Image (cartoon, rainbow over all chains, first blue to last red; front, side):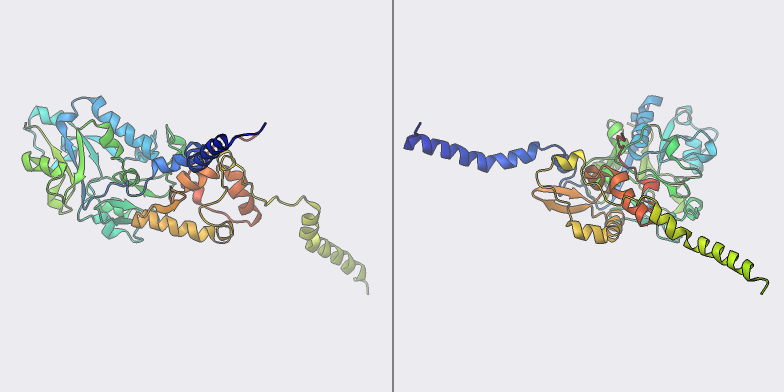
Length: 262
Length: 132
């Protein structure tokens, strides 16, 4: 069978088009290849000049409301649930007013406030004592204000734990792996003998996601840039009265709490 | 010389002990140091190529990994760059082990042969392998 000129041109056109469009299409649908790109894109990272967090206590009326934030953090970062309280590892945890704000505590305090449970985490201070005392610079301050840890460098001396006025740091007395409930295969665990703490979800920010606790809080936790005068956190702080933990220590905490009020 | 026989006995024992490691190694089956590159993800690739040339990776992977570690942790430079429009993150668990999901055949074999004890896996999680 012979083909005419018209048929040949049609066939050639279609083949040419397939050649142009086909290989990129194949690449998109090839298994495993796009997975990396969909998670990690150039320029997708969330950046700020100074990250900060506002905890609006109105958003945490029940135990469930803050437990889901804690669980989200534990699952994202492979934090162990230790059976012995002395070995406990904490990144974000519930605390009473008396323990969270001991300087402002008084026996005749409003019952409402005394019954509140506060979500406590690393304050990512502007003047972090843990960074100053670390002999190996395993704890350091990033340019965006996050007080980060390099676990590869930590020698477990626990100076930072003594220096932190907020108890935001935990030491791994044991190998944490057997105590991790839901292992996240995409995030490392820690090892015995290092100190760990909240990292403001630096790894999630780099992928353009908000911190795990903020995402789970459904608006009760507000995360934003403190040095941007029109940012969400600045707008809240401008209109509502917020307090920080132990301000007299001069560490300049960057986690704010809004208690009561409208 | 009355001690002659004693000396010969001890000399034979000494030679046997000294030669034992060499004899043992020549008799035992050689350690398999050949790394396995075929994983489901790599098999599905149209162009089988690492993000760094193979020879460079083989020679310098320990230096490269240490450099990437410092860049990611301390400077938050997580982007390796893009190859054919796909962006790669400098991440052991998310990128390296995504393709090389066979730690026992890809990492351990050569490390065991070279008697290298790495502490990566004290913290970093290796992908689950379906061992037959």
